[in-house]
Image 1 (tube, one colour):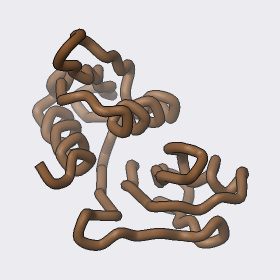
Image 2: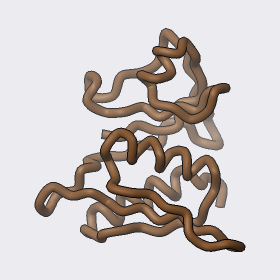
Image 3: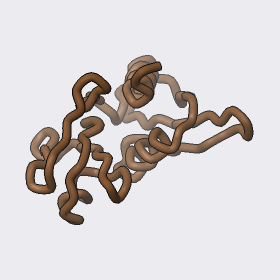
Length: 128
């Protein structure tokens, strides 16, 4: 697999459209950090790591009636074209209604956290 983050986002998008209660994917620390931010921002209900040898990341999705809380996920920086931004150029998603997730020298964080800490980095994805 060349892009594990795109795979995670696609699994979440597909499970949300199918109204599945949870989604499971292979574990990595990067995916766990992205899931932690999604939980912190209120887009998913819970994230847990299961298994000893071959770890799995289990995400419980949130819904409002028959509609998912996550309306859209978009991968920005891809393996073929990395997108980097400075601290003053961090994009706003839907005028501040969505979240930009960045990989910075201080770890994975949201765009607002990165702006507050005055650090830039690679724009991983947008969530709204």
